[in-house]
Image 1 (cartoon, helix red, strand yellow):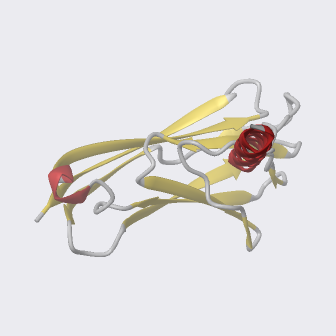
Image 2 (cartoon, helix red, strand yellow):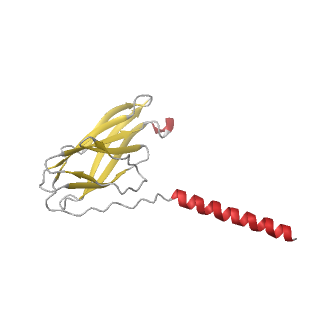
Image 3 (cartoon, helix red, strand yellow):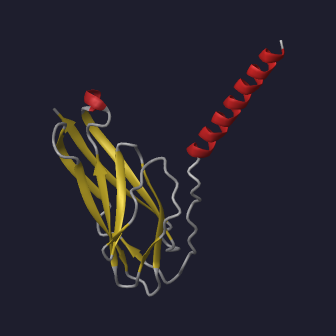
Length: 165
């Protein structure tokens, strides 16, 4: 009888340790980025929409690079980059330095800083095979970013195409 209590106790302890470990590993630990609004940062986006046209299912992943310009006199900060689907990821490049990849679910503390008169490149990558063969047909994906430009605190890029066999 005493051996059964010890075994049950060990099983309960093991389950608690495993559950705690899973909880710790599943939390990203990243806190959302904090940016400070600025009257001197002025974001300019020459192009916010793009049409890939036909995207062959068995072809290369569809990509598009957007330009983000700072036409202000203060540093333009960008953060909270999110995509509308897990099949899409985005990455920013500023002066040859690249950010991590961003997607739909990740929370990141990353903040990009674009100096006055400079620009950044936002690379968007769409994996047309992510949803499998049932993902054939029209698609529309969005990428959103937050900025410290008080006139444009949130910007959205829209991409569309048709996945074909």
